Image (cartoon, rainbow, N blue to C red; front, top):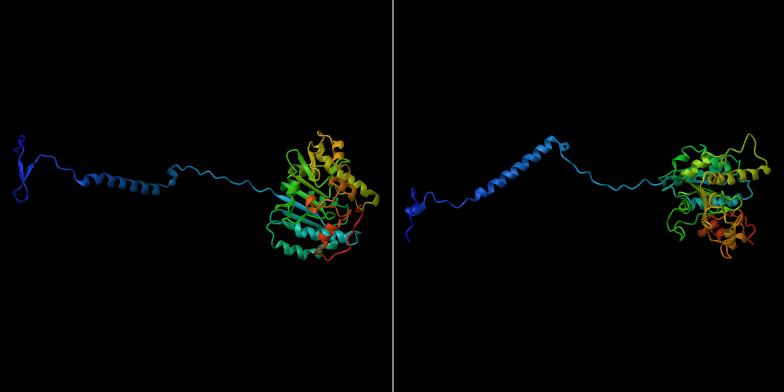
Length: 361
């Protein structure tokens, strides 16, 4: 078949004289034509990145990453009023309780602990405390005190700058214990479930409750001061109150004045919290006492928790005819009476003996 020759077109002879067709006829596009734009784009991007490095990233827009930061851990101060004088009638029991607390109550990797002892005991316990300090990430202090004013002396030292390196206002919580109490149980016990023993009392505090303890004496009413806990609001209230004071004005109070000290200090602390519009709550019974919520004595009588419960007859009524275990109350007032089971616990690995067992009826 013969093709018509377009106007002005010329045939071209190829290699070997073959006819390649008309010179004006369009050819198939070359592969290079497709590659060139892509190559140029890559070169342009490389140049742009190099320019970015020279100019600096301050000219670019960076979207900030969102981080979830944990709130700072709450700080807790534990204050333990240890044995004071070797001549005290119950000195051996106080020593046993102190040793038990050193074994189970000092958790100096999560909370600061201050141990206050009398001059008779400072040199005796210092080597042991120094050994324990080597394994602590938080403060563990041994402090000596004068033999005056009962437990009020230790609280006064704590609140009013009597312990070097401790500012009570820098803590979220403060928990106080004296050596008339045996406890706490080991941390792996069922009641603690590997939580710090202080959590048992701190968990009782909230927006309304600013002071907690093992028990409340409904006469008053007041948190019994052998174990008490405060949050930072409670700390400020007691600091500014007249309840924590220096009872010694140049001479040791006479024996008949001791009851007055207890009333002004122990009753006074709870009264300051209540007068400030806040409430009290005990571990035993777990009820709330405030000026707004009047103490329902009829209800407390049903629960057998009227008055001072730390007598065997009263405790048995509270706990259904038996004495509570250490795990149930966390601290047991053994300075008043010492059940055989708790006696065995505190003297198991203790060289002291002669524990005082009072009325257990």
